[in-house]
Image 1 (cartoon, rainbow, N blue to C red):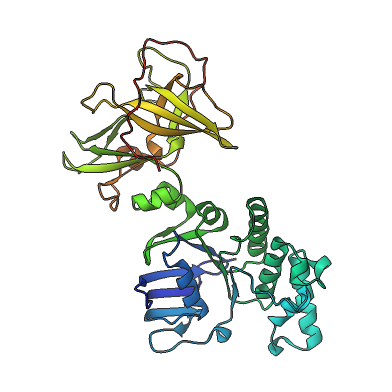
Image 2 (cartoon, one colour):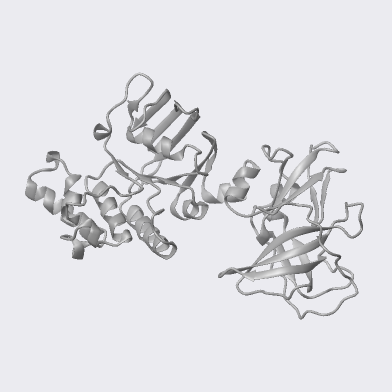
Length: 412
């Protein structure tokens, strides 16, 4: 299905709440069949923006258009029931005195034909979401996942031009949430439903969406495909929202940014400029094999670090590292870093390991974190393309020791 025709157009929308919160100049569009996530921390304005689209809040500035027709501006607002949108609330808002079938049928007005025709469409939609066996059950007889699918069926039955989902998985436990969001994504994609979904969960946003609109303090910070926001963040807030990062404060020296992990080359940045370097834990490739003399691996020279702790997190292992800080006046100074390795990788405390810094997993920003400063490795190749994983060896004693740790950088 072609996706070049916008179903939803939000142009310079502003909103002022009585308590002082505001939305500022939000502009974005959603194409036919596209799934867009409004993501961000609590209180950033994502649910308010969704309510504006639904017609539950007034627009104070700008316009909202659905299927090419303006439904809201500062002078007028089409009521929610006239916009043709389907809205799934966070608590699903099912009628407790109605069965599954009747809850879904409630969303079908007389415009959809006779009572028998409406019942038939409701039944077909219930079967589509896999709930035919509970068509006559009441909400209190359903699991949380089944209630969520009833709410989704109710908004899908009228075939609205756009479906709005306000944190639809937040009331489900972790295991059920993963299964239900997978089933929901399959349903939305199969039926080509144009969807706007609100979530504060970065993993959920990346899993569910074709594009993500990331908000902060009522402003749209960056919008794009998940890979764009993860691999080319516009500021440090975007970078850290989608994953943990090690932070290092540094200064440009001779076109280079020295860090305890290695140097990054930048262009057109004055010497002495203070910068912030963010390195993802998966950007530290490690091996317990000590190679005296620092043999270069994948074009970069490894450094020796000491393991402070290692924890298995299920699919990955998190290793806490003490890395010598060559820029510190104290020769014993070290910097604390987190490294993430796939599977089970749990070296013992105080093990000496070799660390290689993958520059494709590093981001440089101005000191306030607001302005990206692309470095050479970022500009010369595809970001987030990892170096080859270092082959692990057997831990061995070494005369190269790492002193006790002094925390110098913040790991989020």
